[in-house]
Length: 427
Image 1 (tube, rainbow, N blue to C red):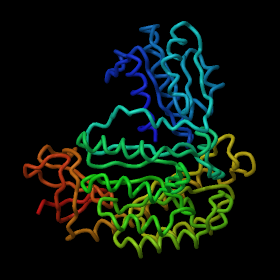
Image 2 (cartoon, rainbow, N blue to C red):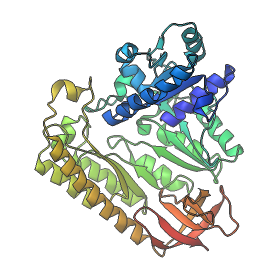
Image 3 (tube, rainbow, N blue to C red):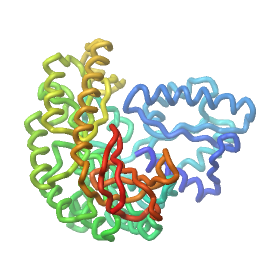
Image 4 (cartoon, helix red, strand yellow):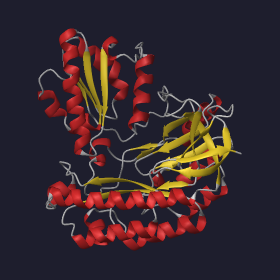
């Protein structure tokens, strides 16, 4: 999401006469796009601000701005810091950046963190900042209506609102015409995409189909789905189109129904397992990844074991795994006690990571001997003689060049694997 937001910001500033530089020492304006989902993300931002402070000593004209979720959540605290930030802009106020920069240049603190119920930036053509020119992101909605007890997103990004489908299709078509061959549709919960116009309703399944029809050579991914909303109709839409990737990111967060209820996730362990069952039935071979939080308020060893058993049962291809980090202002911070000691959180997280590494290794070993269509994304990081790309299941594959180049599709037979990568050759 932050990548997509940054591309919108660059577009707005370029239209106002600003130029982008890769060298921070040449910059007269430094903007840091932030995330507040976890405490360690915010701590990295504070560290980055302190690093940038020395540039202000060399050049007093340099202006520093903080964008996004952290700007929204910590505006008062940021304003109280000693000459670290001149501009504070929330995620719905990027259009005001040129005027805010002018205000900051006149010696005033420039702040706009007002949340909107309408802003989607649908009319802005993002300036693509990716390096490979093959894969890109398109934001289809903003905000979130799910009030998960641990999550700060609804407070810093506001209520859910969807973009006009025509603007999304137009943006994806422009990407394809520019040589891109893969797009990821982004939203806090893409399944709840809902656009109403003239009595017609476009849901996410309908949008996904519209995007898939642009061209069969344009791969389509999406993130993130919410287990309470992902439908069989959506899964059947994916099954109908070869260019909609067979990978679904479906955050479980916990394998314990009791913990899920405390998290306000609005589904049970059994519901989640039913959704995985439907994915396996309707989309054989589809990869499933997940998010897991360990050490949430009151979590017991029994709850932890339920998460481990869910992982074993589901066989996730990969996972993002975290210790619970209390976020100020959330329901959990207000109503629940963060009572699992840190050393227990760490121990349980290590168990989860070890199990997932084992499960991921099994998943990759099962791919040995199979042939996959791979979209070439770039040269391998390890060798100029190797190329790298991904399968429809979002697994990274490395293979010899053989006069192929990025943006092309090739069939690769998998001959071996590492813990993170499939290795093969073009056939």
